[in-house]
Length: 162
Image (cartoon, rainbow, N blue to C red; front, side, top):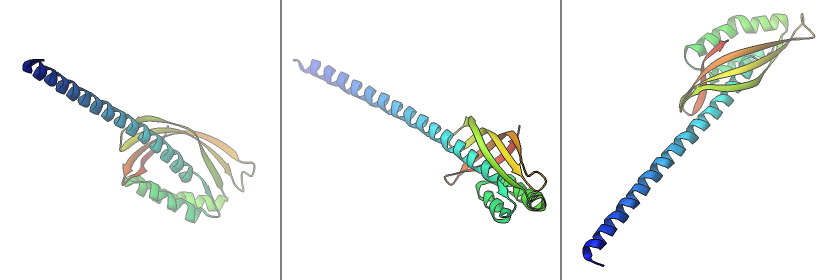
């Protein structure tokens, strides 16, 4: 083989290797991005379900300790607003009417998601019993939850009934 032919073959092999390396890197990056997006959707959905069930479930006997813990899963002005509502209305009303509420997130789906922000729609059922309603009532709701990832945790920034 002539020297020029070897150089050409070597240059072609090097170019082919470089193209394969670039294609492999791009494929890996796309795969990694897809996996991160899938993980964000799954984690945000689980956080939305868990947070809503905690926000809307309580027992009048232990409401003073149950609901204030929920604030750790909230952020921003929504956190402050929720704190005011539970201390000003929900806790006193639940004690007065001896309410027990069990909320269950029946279904949830992601409306949109990124690595650190998600919007989740949750179908929530609540069973409420109390001294005036001993047999209980069932309330079904659709709730839109906006979540932000903060220091590795998904926190609810907004909860809106639909």
